[in-house]
Amino acid sequence: MSQATATTQDVKSWNGGHSPFNVSYGKMMMWFFLLSDAFTFGAFLISYGTTRFFSAVWPDPNKVFHSFPFLGEANAPLLFVSLMTFILILSSVTMVLAVHAGHYNDRKGVIKWMLWTIIGGIAFLACQAWEWTHLNHQGAWWGSFTDPATALSSFEHFFTADKAVIAQHGLQATHDFYNYFFTITGFHGFHVFSGVVFNVMILLNTVNGKYELRGHYEMVEKVGLYWHFVDLVWVFVFTCFYLL
Amino acid sequence: MSAHHHNDNDTQVLYEGDQSKLYSGLMNHHTDIHSADSKKQVSKIWKVTGLLAIVTIVEVALGLYGTGAGMPKGLVNIFFLLLTIYKAAYIVRVFMHLGDEKKSFLITVLIPLTLFIWFIIAFLYDGGFWLEMNTNF
Image 1 (cartoon, rainbow over the protein chains, first blue to last red):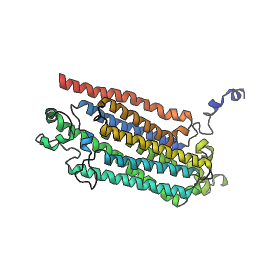
Image 2: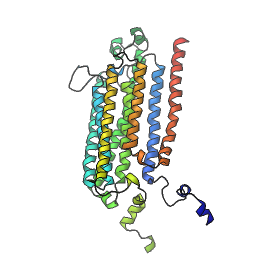
Image 3: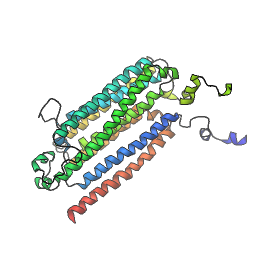
Image 4: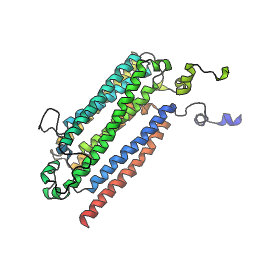
């Protein structure tokens, strides 16, 4: 008895019976999954950074990424990836609006904003498919640029460095650059793809009235966390590959 | 027999828990999407959207014209990293509602991320060291 009265409110919150973090189990586990996923992406990006620091030269993003669909040979550095970034940010906004509608048990709102989020996700994936195809047509892929006999003219335009340095180290740097580029944007793209699949599942459940029956739309919130995380990772991928 | 009987609704409760006991503050159940409170939230979301868009435009402008206008590449890169963290913070705080969670939960999520400080410094330093060894020795 006396023990019970001596405990503070703070200690009581860990004595069982309710959530000390005021968060449901599923949502907390989503956060912890995202934390582990952040370390996976972090490890990828840091190993990319290590290789880049290790290299005497590195491709200049403004020289590598300068094309835009239907503009042919027009030189438009950063324009297309900016469009992709805006698409992903906007789909994150529509997602948070879906979560908001869910907090108010507004089924129609959830359906509307989930639809927009899915469209945004598909648009982003379409952009990425175009970019990968375009780079592939220029000879880039996993394991490309390995043949020592490769002509200097096929990769020197990626660089802004001294020509002698490019001749000596450019081939290896181009090879490393594209391996990391396809691995990291591919891993991110796969996250976007699985996010779209989750979003479709949540939309179908919402349309079928499953969450209305359940009395809350917390699943929208959990999948929303995943979707925002995908946007968050893109913020870092964008900086590491296209800006720095 | 009756003690072990669950109807469909009870099964739902067991599956997801009774969320009404868990939500508080912003996460609490609300009823009117057209209420002033709801509109305030939505306008905050759009404000953050505008902020993220402006920061992205600044980043792209720096990427295109920063070094051309005479800014040293190192300084441009520092701006890129600061703006990236600025954007990330807004996404996590507002879009992912981490700013609305209990402070103890926020700290629980953020503390493991401080490992990145060591992680980034150690590995990039290692890369730079190997370049030095390969170039000068």
